[in-house]
Image 1 (tube, rainbow, N blue to C red):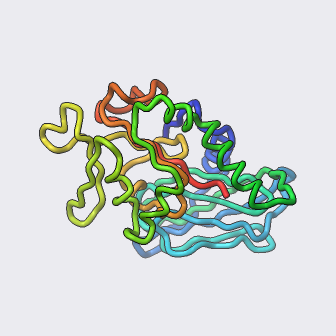
Image 2: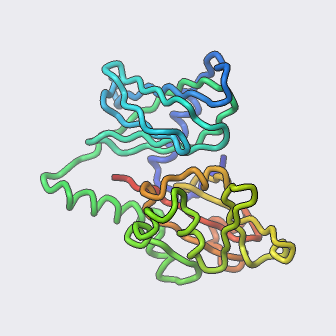
Length: 252
């Protein structure tokens, strides 16, 4: 797993918590996977009522009084794990699940100050988060194609995945071989044979097309697309000659 130097520091904490705090349990008999998340605060006390979502899995799980939340029926492959609780900074990480895997991880949530005007605070936090990862700076430079939450909201009822939205990115096209979503760049040497696959980052973490397909459109805050190596921002330039797609998840 790789990570952009411009991703929020909190994401690094999430990844460290997930990998250093994870331990495999017995495998299930089925082909789907299971994830048990122990959610604690900075004093190692259980956090009840935290919501845990895994992209591609049905529904969400809430942590109990012991801080444990279990997510069932997780399809194999790369999945985004999102842990949220009011009053705490959300934590995201990418985990690759094997068929029948049963994992247990521990995640530490950091308290986040919340003002009296909740609506105003949420809007400010989202703006600051995108600012911190350089979204607005890159959009001003105009080298790529950009979709914000307001624009993405228009496509949410049109498709269960991000396919329609991703098809709006300049220089990319969406295909569905065998019914699976795939995004291809129209530029780069491999595009001549119809198979130029861009690098994909989710919240600054290197992902893949399988994870991109599983992301719920309503959970995405913004998307950036850079078709071809020449347009790719310097911090992501080494990953692919076929361009880069950057996805930023909602924080509130």
